[in-house]
Figure 1 (cartoon, one colour):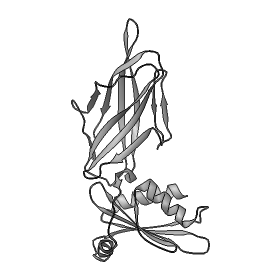
Figure 2 (cartoon, rainbow, N blue to C red):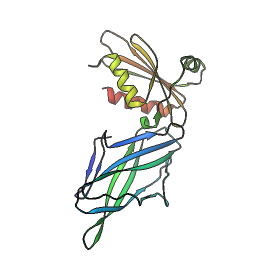
Figure 3 (cartoon, rainbow, N blue to C red):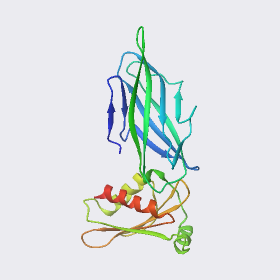
Figure 4 (cartoon, rainbow, N blue to C red):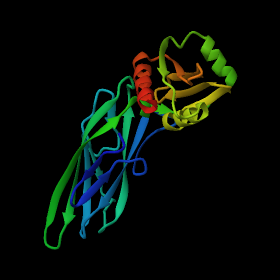
Length: 236
């Protein structure tokens, strides 16, 4: 999802780990999508606009009119770069989304102003709706025994070249999970969705081949299943 690049002769819009990010707000159901624009021309680029079609699960926030964002204070001088932010209000997190986005801009040449555009799709996988949440071990134990985590999903990952601790660290970093408890080759991980639903993942190394068994628990069935598939893809 991060490796695709859209190249234009004038403007370059980059998607990779360093130049593209999706960040959940720590307190409200909002995503901040940050894009890096790079000018590849000797002219000034301005009048940058973003048009996004809302989905049933997300709504564009920093709009000046329906589905349109203007960036009047951002100009790209020759061979410069700048970041733009797109904010989405999220009202459902069960499934991943692909949003069609059109970026338009003007190129100020010596005697003329030319308009151009870049069209692309923004991928919002379910894991981007997770936010890091620290939970007390006693509260976590109460949650596990409360009976509220009625949705369950299990995944078995074949042996990996990574050791158990490295796998846990990778999962926590990439999916914004927090280790609640770790004993030998077992670990309890926790996060919340940006809508406040609890997400519990119990990792355990189950045999001499170091297969990993992951038990997922939540209150949201579809989200948990889709998150499981994302983790499976990242570990296999």
